Amino acid sequence: MNRRIIFDRFLIQRFGISLLTLVAFLTVIPIIAVFAYIISKGAPALSWQFLSAMPSDGMRAGGILPAIVGTFYLTLGTAIISVPLGIAAAIYLAEYASENWLTRLIRIAIINLAGIPSVVYGLFGLGLFVLFLKFGTSILAASLTLSIMTLPVIISASEEALRTVPQAFRTVSISLGGTRWQTIRKIILPQALPGIITGVILGLERAAGETAPILFTGAAFFLPHLPNSPLDATMALPYHLFVISTQVPGMPIQIQYGTALVLIIFVLGMNVTATIIRSRARARRQW
Amino acid sequence: MKRSLSWSETLITAVVKTCGYSAVVFVLLIFFFLLREGVPALGEVKLSELLSTRWYPIENHFGILPLITGSIIVTLGAMLIAAPFGIGTAVFLSEISPRWLREILKPLVELLGGLPSVVLGFLGILILAPFLRTFLNLPTGLTALAGALLLGGIAVPTIVSIAEDALDAVPQSYREGALALGATKWQTIWRVTLPAARSGVLTALMLGIGRTIGETMAVMMVTGNAPVMAIKLSSILAPVRTMTATIAAEMGEVANGSTYYHVLFFIGLVLFVISLAVNIIASSVVFRSKTRAERVLS
Image (cartoon, helix red, strand yellow):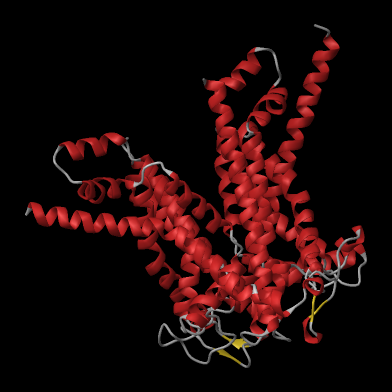
């Protein structure tokens, strides 16, 4: 072969691979920069008082306790509703359903639920939970809305976790006289649990950081007290960050960065927990 | 004993089955409520008015075209950024990067996927918009471009993770075959691996578009919220307003059951139908590729 052609091929290769490497690093470096920037700007604002006090002076001073508590309640409410429902749906798809048109329909529905814009979930929650069922703008209505949004993530992840359990586990359990449900509860679920927990946390992480679905279903601009019942509206970290960065003039910049940092810690703490559970379970797995 | 066991078994099967159908029920419920609250808009506002170019609800001008063009221009801009960076990063992670580097970079990209969009919007207001204003010498930095840049960042993790899965699914023997025939690594990537993963990469792009068009908070915070027609190339440097931002910004101030309220639900219905279409196209691409793979194997 002609020497020159070989030379050109490798020149192109070197150029192409360098370009892809550059693109990858141009993608990742801004991500690191964003996190580093928020951490460095927000850290000075963090103090016990910032985390544990009520806002004062029109939210321009004091702490962000009601927003933190509110996001905690919303995440908890979402978990209570979506976790049992999602895991049961995954069990149905992985262990019971046969491949027919109905199962295909369910899968299409799950894919579409995952793709519906978050603000449309907000509209739906307003129409069904707030107005039609008369829950009002409340933690209950917002949690229900977030639950439906979280459902496809939990179902898909849990189904995948259930399917990775080898078929032999089922065969042996059934052959020893176990019923289908006994097999699922005593054998399959414990094996799939780390994968399911990871999926659940990733789903709830998304719910905790969302603003649009709670805008008209449960978020309060400002509350002078903590919510007392599921029928109260609540402040929430993501909505609070939106409010103080766009709606309140003369907002001290430090409080804004501090709020952003607390939100990130809340959400990424969940993300890191999920990653750790996943990698630990993988290392321990014996099949 | 035996009887009670089979009883509980039947009961549990019924419960699990019901939960299994829940996703279908929810999609239908969402569609139903959007129709119920959105369709009356068609009776209250003339279709020609709805498809006009003026969105000024206070004076009963409900033209949604500026909002649609706003969504389109921001989405297009975002995809022009996210497609090369997303696919490039996916190829790098799957084909070029050494294993240890991949183990570091991949979680970082996933971290971006977990970042709440309101935080990106917040940084957009404080850093990106002022930068664009001085750098491009604009009257305001809150423009379609700022929205496109942020949305590009939001679409990248989606594209990377799905495109990388698709590349990983290409059988190793394809690469070995190409290399054995004397192709360079680059030729293998460009001529063999990427075309083999084409359908998965297309799915990644479609879902990236879906993610972008439905994104609300970041876009509402940085695009300047001016409902003007965005059909010229220069519109990218002007404020625009998307469908999602309009709903999010205005629904809170609207009287329930009013025409305005119905029109906002109608916009939600349009968004719902778009996301449905995007998802169906994306999943049918996957479906077609499967049948092609089956053809090759048989």
